[in-house]
Amino acid sequence: MSYPVEFLTLFPGMVSGYLGASILGKAQEKGLISVTLTDVRDFAEGKHRVTDDAPYGGGAGMVMKPEPLVAAIEAARARLPGAKVLLMSPRGPTFTQVTARELARHEAGLILVCGRYEGVDERVMPFLDGELSLGDFVLTGGEVAAMAVVDAVARLVPGVLGNEASSVAESFEEGLLEHPHYTRPPVFRGAEVPAVLQSGDHARIARWRRWKAIKLTQERRPDLFARLEFSKADQKLLAREEEAL
Image 1: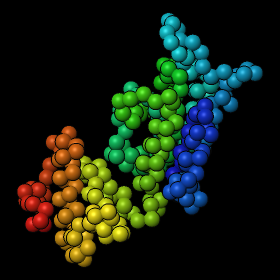
Image 2 (image 1 turned 135 degrees about the horizontal axis):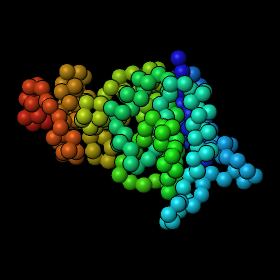
Image 3 (image 1 turned 90 degrees about the vertical axis):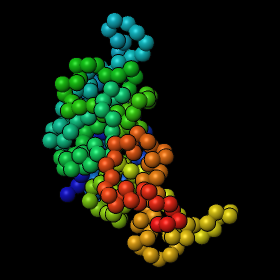
Image 4 (image 1 turned 180 degrees about the vertical axis):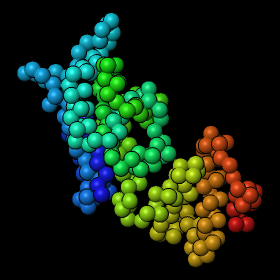
């Protein structure tokens, strides 16, 4: 069964190239995900297909008009009944790996609304299921954020990744950053691959990777580390030095 995604955007060309490449492109070829790009301008009336206007009350910038955007949302809902309709917006809850997993389990799919200008008319909100943000910063439009969401969600759709274990072992899946990775050559400009990874001792390698993931999280994301609850085995592991693993 294909996982459906629809983008509502003023700039479908910004999205098509990225979604057609690499893992996302192959997933579409295999029928694992389906992507529809809808130009909101197609739902605007008049010769010039205007989708924005000046804000009531004055102020800088323009605001996306409600008529074409709501018409585009209603058309998308008709195509994908049951899909979640989310507006990419800095005032929405922050998108996380937990959110990605929840959305991936929603088999009816996603309709992502990409805002532009100063934002969208507030009267569009009742036609949405929610808003979603990538973080505390402002982008020119919602397209980049929506592509990030689809990338993260699509990786969790069964069959999209060649190795299903890949999505389980990645950063943030357990609240930890991922352990370091190495590949050939064994020595690069004097820097060697850790001996443990070349030992062939899989139990020792697993301990080292777990230890590194915990240590990296402690050093680089103390905010994440502070929220973690470690097992007794992890507590013992954390107290050891790398050479003793």
